[in-house]
Length: 257
Image: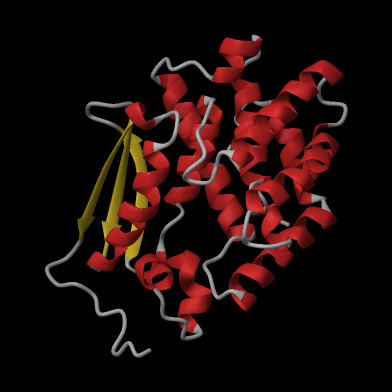
C-alpha cells in the first residue's frame, strides 16, 4: 500500500502511517467498501483513493486553522497537542467509511464498530491507556459526525466532515462514469475539475472549486453546503465555485429512463 500524508515532525503520525501501509486487513476492508459502493451500488469511489484524499484534506484543514490561531478541541478539552489532533483527523479519515463494507445505509454506525478495535490496534504502544482512550473517542466522534445531518462537537470532526465533502472531483466518479453509469452523482463529479484549499481573504480557509460544467453545482449545493453548514468550522471557511472556460463541457449525449 502507498498511503501518504505530509507528517512533518509529527513522529506519532509517521509511525501510524507506517502501520497503515503494513495493515493487510485495513487494505482489504477498503477494497470491500468499493465492492459495495462502486460495483454493487454504482456509487462513487469510497475506497483507498477517497481515503487518501480525505486524509490529506483534513490534515491540511487542521493545519490551516491552527496557523490562524484556532485551537483544536483536543487541546482545549484535554490539554493534548496539535500533533494529537493531526493523528485524530488522519485516522478518522482512514476509518470513516469502513462501515460501507457492511452496508451503505447507516454506514457511520457500522464504521464505528469496525473502527474502534482498528484504531486501538494502530495506536497500540504510542500512547498510554488514558490518552489512547481520549484519542479513540475523538476519532469515533469524527466518524459518527461525518454524515451531513450529524452535529460536530469538535474542530477535528468538522475538518473530517468538510474534507469528506471536498472529495468531489471527476476522478472520484471515474469508474462508474466510464462504465456508463449516468446519475446526478457521477455526472456532477465528472463536472468538477479541481478543488483547492487556500488562505482566505476574510476567513482562514478559502475553498476554490473549478468546474467544466454547471452540473457540478449539485455537489457544491447538496453535499458541501449541507456538510459545511452543519460542521464546527463553518465560520472559518469561505467557498467559491466557478466554471472555467468560455463554453461548458458536454458530459452526456442522451439521458433516458
